[in-house]
Length: 357
Ligand code: G3P
Ligand code: CA
Image (cartoon, rainbow, N blue to C red):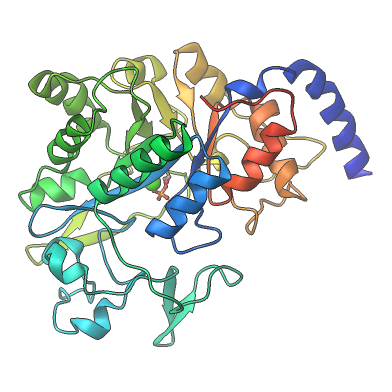
């Protein structure tokens, strides 16, 4: 019954959406991370071939001011750092990227994301690439840009970058300017105008405003910016700075009271959790859509929610295609971050004329 009602809705919206699918984008979240370890070069190449429109890079600075492509400011959930440098943890037991040089980080093996359970490493996603198999390494931002630009040349395409600077306030506290270093690299590689195939993202509004109002002038550049918004259930946690607790500065949002017009003065889009757009207790027959997308669109902002995973569906969607349909066509988002870019590309291609921007 559920399926029947949903298919009826689909038929209605297909008619409305015919031709619109071509304007929707697919962002490879940490690469094709549903298939290969997140942020490995291998997963980036696979996501490229799968047809993603943009490929995401999370960025963190090393001790010697090199940008590496890693999601965490720590090394200890995707590498064997604890085996190779057991004495280099801070007093909270974590191994901070910022305490290691690039040469040291290059000595590590990278693997599928894991958590520690009863002292053992356990994969976060049990049906993904196995832990500790094959050989993956951490790479720099420049190495990844050259991979994507190289593939753009050899494939005759123009796949975009979607870099995120991680925890700029923490980097500032440690005496490092991650935004400035990232933008200089982007400018060097030709990403410096509004037409460059890039979105530059950050969870910290203060840093995005600094980028828009100060750094762009200083560097004579101007690229599209996206403000990330934390999910309402995102846990606050502190990291260590000079032996003291330092609260990461990305939780200062009350999703009920967001001023989209103010955001549009420094950003081109928002990146919310998809749970901010559809109530978690929705049913397939009754998808409860929040006003966030329509209000953001009214302010001229694109909306690129995260993170769509076919191996972790919300209770109101029985399949990944259903989830994609709800968000692309009912919620009317402009693009998605997904660990499974092939599935989103196939989905969009099945609707009329999806073409890559
Ligand atoms: O940047 C979009 C999305 O990646 C945000 O979540 O924690 O995976 O960086 P996270
Ligand atoms: Ca990210």
